[in-house]
Length: 539
Image (cartoon, rainbow, N blue to C red; front, side, top):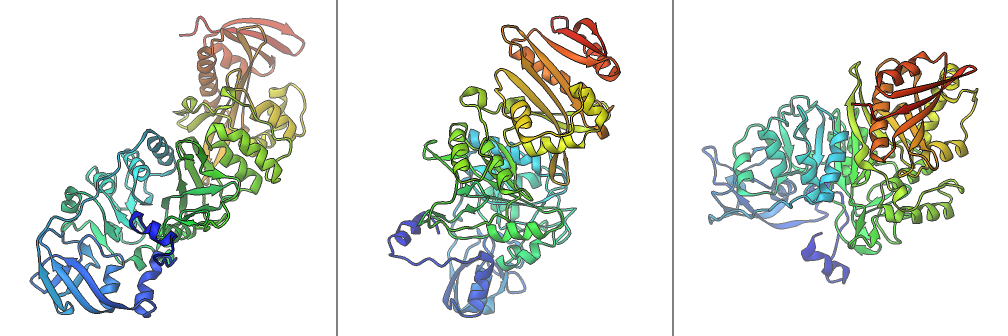
């Protein structure tokens, strides 16, 4: 369903059949939708009498095979494409010779928001993954941000200019695909003449029928496939619609459900749902408490692994309703987040005492995220805490040994209840304090390896600092990277130094403060040192 039919369908002047795109050829074969005449466009025949369907194989091949009459426009501008694109001239009843340039699709220039989404998605896609992606400004931005990846594969519905560019750059090689190795597989192409020229007689590209490319059973055979699709609206429980806005039909079911479900079944497959956080000039949120009445549920709560907006990444797979709701709220537009918190409380989706910070102090400072490598070669993401991080922090603190807990809090602590986590570590005013997490990805999910924080002293340009690193990751340089980044943030906020209370036995932490180059004043008390650390001498 497109712009040219949407209005007629919603006025009842045209009919719409909801169907997975992969199932359309079966409707032709079983005569559920009988084809009287198939009008197609082909390249002139080769020496063996075969014409190529060129840029559009998808459902066209099935239509040709099941039509009572086939009429072809023979056009020398049509590229010859490898794969399941060939039809013998004897199967065509009438041929009309007419050379004309093919219709071209001008790719949308990615907006700033699309670029931000593209950068987030690029963090999820790994070297060697096979990708599926659609068209539009957001998919274009995603592809543009994959230029540093290595040995990507493609198994998709639509071949675009962005895919062609990545093939030219050597990013897409298809060498690690578990099926159709060495081949970029698609069903049709939309692009400019340069893209059509690129696919012409290119042995690295094969077009296959839609019941192959979009078949979940086919997709499930592809190890490390990453399906990337967009949606109109998603609710706080993880249901998404890509086909309707309330009772108004907007688009067909298409192929995204096939790809998302197939990828979820594949070994190490990933599903990513992307959307701009708002619509209607930021007057409406695309993330909603529940889908509007009458909306079609294109993707269920079990279909989506990652959701990406311009404000970040929410990981939903295996998470409970409360965790999902908080994760999605954290990547919604900041101006809607307080409303979401209150609505989610009313719906009993989250804690009744869930706190939040309004205004600038509650806006997540994405610019403080950095990827870095420690002295031991460990790659970590340093990022501010999000309002959705309570489950991760709970797992982190309960994983610490008694010794590490005691050194961090200078007291025994057997439990870390919701109230303590929320009040001390999760819900913070980013303009007055900071909590930085050192994160690695394990099994497709983030794991916190270290936490550093400071809280400003009232009436002073200093703050109290504390750092703790997970036992299994100690002595690998994480504490150094955390303190270095935290110091940078504190200086940016106008602070002149830190204070810290450190056990005398905690030689590692004392050494860390000493080697950072702070000016240090040390007050000795029973069992602990009170430290005053100045920034001015730091290079």
